[in-house]
Image 1 (cartoon, rainbow, N blue to C red):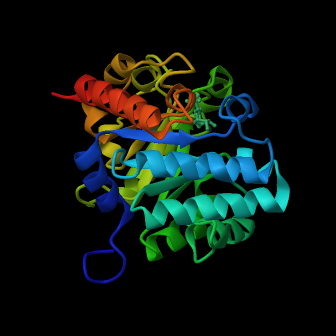
Image 2 (cartoon, rainbow, N blue to C red; image 1 turned 45 degrees about the horizontal axis):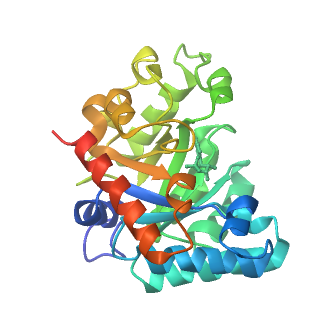
Length: 286
Ligand SMILES: O=c1ccn([C@@H]2O[C@H](COP(=O)(O)O)[C@@H](O)[C@H]2O)c(=O)[nH]1
């Protein structure tokens, strides 16, 4: 979608936000111990308050936020309504939102997830995470609706957890490692887009040498590379340079618990996020 024909594309909006605020996507993960530490109840009201505090603290200070849908869904319909209000709050504050929902299903059901997460539903943020492990092609309805609405999609490629390798490093029938096939499919979606396309990948900060070992050309993806695992999972800003190499200009690092541990003070949250964004900017520069 080019300028003037519809909503500004996600890739363009994200690139602008990263230029303004640095490559940090702050997670909104209201874990039970964090809710307790913040003096909040472990229910729908607590997770909503938690999310809205993060939005208030970080709007105009970070490129985007990533609410983790699981922590809202665990409180049922009231939790889902809380997530909707956090997404609305972020939008009103001008903060980009990636809803980390990791949906994936057969194509016909994917159309339902598309309506929920990249269509007109109140659950739709600026982008959503999805799983390609029912086949990249099964994502088609969601990829198409996201493009129509100027929204983004982050496809799991090399996840930050150690168990992911058993599936993602496996070599498929066509001789390509599964994660490389996912990366090449994302690249095809983004061909020709500037500054980059709307279909990103999830590649953990903790994956070590997997990108080069599997022969994955991340720069060719030409889409944002969401890198969770910085902070609580042991990944560092310096690791990102090693993992992403020439593709580092595409990196959007995700960090949740490390930043959230500074709350509930909005000033302390903001300071923690700024420190993290500055370290990431420095590590990824040049
Ligand atoms: O490969 C992945 C994909 C997603 N995540 C999510 O990111 C955050 C990480 O939280 P931290 O507190 O910074 O560890 C969380 O919501 C995960 O579900 C990931 O970690 N790895």
